[in-house]
Image (cartoon, rainbow, N blue to C red):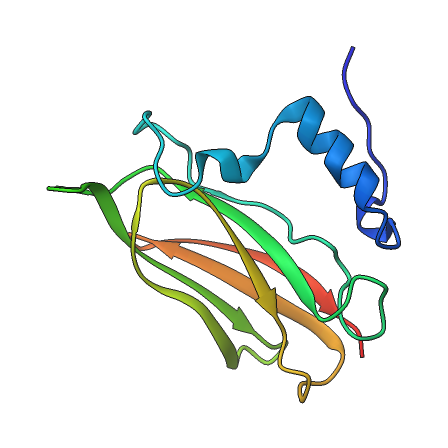
Length: 141
């Protein structure tokens, strides 16, 4: 028993599929910002849709899910310095999505690529307390 998905990023804007997945497995954003469990594993999920951009049915934006387990205890809860940045294939920083303190837990961000950037492979990097995770994404014009 389980679920199998293939090429979900090629759903051609079919929102019903994403809604069905959310209904069956929950919305990762439902635990957005704070979780009650401080033992969340450092996580950076593949962006969706991927590829994305003006040359796709999904448009110029993509969504990135991430989570991090460690932070310092403050009056508001556990927080950590987080950065989520986009780099081109040459390693040059092209965008900063996040560079701030956030509550420990799972988060979701939608990102719109600068339309002046060329099509190609880009990398997004999550940095949490010196631990870095990187994934690649494809932007099409």
